[in-house]
Image (cartoon, rainbow, N blue to C red; front, top):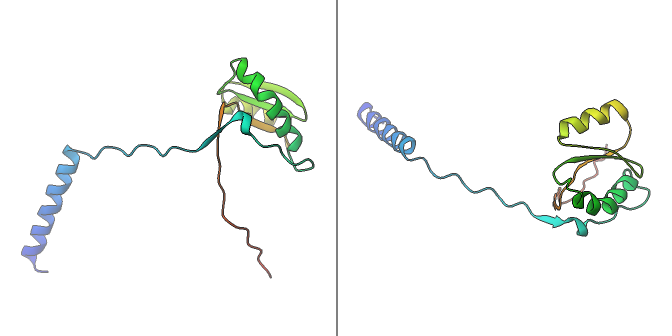
Length: 127
């Protein structure tokens, strides 16, 4: 490419850049994340880590929603609610102060729970 062609390409790129800055493209709408209603939450298998807290949360979430706690954060240890906070940071601070290095459930109280999807398979590595 000679100097004249490079100048033309640069000029065209500048014109396109200016046009985009004047008329930026509309932002893409956010992807809708699939959710399920709290009544559809599945039970944890007994004996699994956190199963007691999860199953207790499933039993209590309807009451918590009814009391107007949607969007707040709940801290559960065993089958006991230790507190409800407005922000995740407040709840994490309380967890760190009271239950350092212990299994607890810290969860946002939601009517519709996001569906989280993980990897498609598990691979075992051999040494």
